[in-house]
Image (cartoon, rainbow, N blue to C red):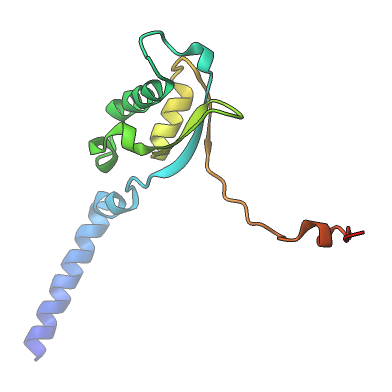
Length: 139
């Protein structure tokens, strides 16, 4: 048993030394691309005439930043599938799954029509009975 435990300790110390000497082994797992949902506000008036529908323009916009990014899993995914929702009533734009680097690139690249790129924020409902909460009862 003594011999086995000494081998384990040697292997463990060798492994920890290798990790200490090569921090990129540790940081590779920490720098995984984790996509988030972003809401991209677009100026529909700036849509190029080559697109027949604004959804094609949105997919092309996502494709343009996907080609330039270095994300592996997200790169392989079809840009049209990364678009979750298209806004058409209150404002023009779309919600898409992007990495943080892609969102920054989209906002700073000067792509025509991009007004803003905002991370999705989920708000918690504080009351389900607003009239009662405000003291407004049935009269």
